[in-house]
Length: 604
Image 1 (cartoon, rainbow, N blue to C red):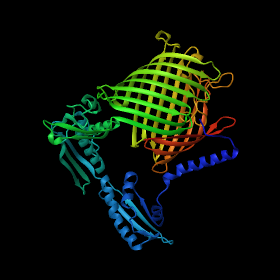
Image 2: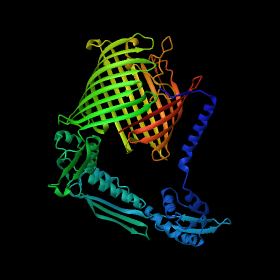
Image 3: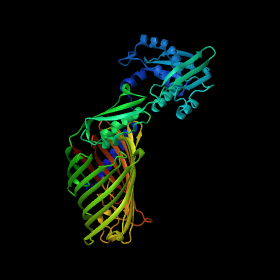
Image 4: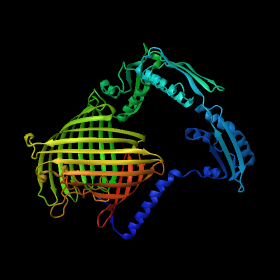
């Protein structure tokens, strides 16, 4: 639901003024610089010619205006002349990493009538020192590893190349990091020389990596969580005993244990000093959270009105590592009671069986529905965040939509969900970039005991793309389609609607879709919704947003009438997610009305 629907001409003008101002702010903020830096650049200018790209960047960094040269907006002449004398040597040294050891550098310091100074630095790089011999060798037990041999073949410097020290260090780093990643923890360079003849401008590389023996993961021991079965704890391991030792898998294991939300602390330690036959034992120290947890929450949303929630968790039911959850949500327009029992499977971290029972009641301007359902599901987790869930849902729904007669429908629906979730977080509850997508197909048949035969497919996706200047591009798309002979037999909870905080902003909650002869929205067989949002951070916990939404529910794939909305928003980021305030405007309608969308939530 919305708080207001405003259509006054003065407010429209104010809206567009704010929109233009925020757009200008988003464009200009990245180019703003600190006042002190700007003032120094105005009175003392360094002009460099003769080089470009990374070489120019290196020279500019070497010739950065030192502290004390400009005081109170005025150049100190003594400091200026001293800096000019040092500029040539600094420029020469800054070019050596790129192989230029004998460049011609001239400097000229000139004072202006207004008291400012200009230092002109002219560079003729000349010819770089070039590689005349490159000897890159592998030795030790890992010398035949394909990944290491490929790095040797593709080493960044070959005979004839200019001597680039950054390329050399990059190649060395890749070799050592890859050897360590393959479990060669004692890998080291027994020779690492760059022999330079400055007069002849020639260089020779002599590099040899001795891998040493390959280490593996040894036995894993758990301490401090004796109440949990060890096979359940082992689900969180990102490695198996006997695999090559990889340091990053220890961090991933620790992250898995924290993400389980069952442990106050988790410490994963590789006891390398206890290694036997290159097998490194791993010790995991855990401090469990209280087994029983009760988490209340309060919030507000213009779609649902005020809301309160309560979640109960038993994180180790029957001391088997199972989990029992019970959730109560009471909102102005919706009430939900849910119970879940989760049985972890020992094969994969995200593999589990789940059984649920749910009652859901929703009353709004479009429909009145109550659903009692139960579901059994089997989820199997794959690498890189992929998950597949097979489920069977049994539901009984009583509903009324618009002027239709009240109905009660029983459905037995098997289905499958397949998707992937990969987010990166800079802080709790605030992803910096990543994506999520999920496809679901479900259906019912009279042969299974359902009152209605149907097949329904849905897709839901979102992505965050990190842009320069503390800006994010947020994309969202949702779609669905239904194959069913008689639309009126479709329960309200399975019809598609659009509009609202999480759909097309500028329109009321589920106010978009096909209408009956009385003009009442009754939902559609198909759905298409998309959103593009640009969010710019303006403080540690604040950001501004510009957005454009489009979509609708419809019955005819050949006759799609999309609704459009655009607007501006303010975000206050918290550990449990953003608090959003959006001012949205409808597009393409005769009234082009405004609507405020507010979403506020917190838990403890």
